[in-house]
Every structure is written in C-alpha cells, then in structure tokens.
Image (tube, rainbow, N blue to C red; front, side):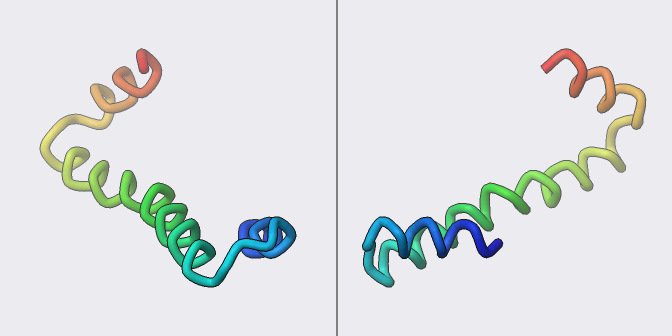
Length: 55
C-alpha cells in the first residue's frame, strides 16, 4: 500500500487526487471478494472454479 501514495507524491499530484486514487484502488481490490462470497454459497465451488478458469 505504500507504493501508490509514493508514486502519486512523486508525480506532484494533490491530496484530493491522492485520496481519489487510493479510494478507487481499495474498492477495486476488495469489492470482488465481497461479491464472490455470496456467490459461493449460492453456487457450487466447482462451478465457480470453472468460471474463473474460463474467464
């Protein structure tokens, strides 16, 4: 997590831009896990694994 703020600081972007980029990075990183967990209960694990391989 240190690489993102350091890269933004190196590009001389402001705090607002830093917060927006960090927020979008966190949502993009952790949101798929929250979506996949309920699907795992509804679908079988083997089907989810096959979908992941096919994707």
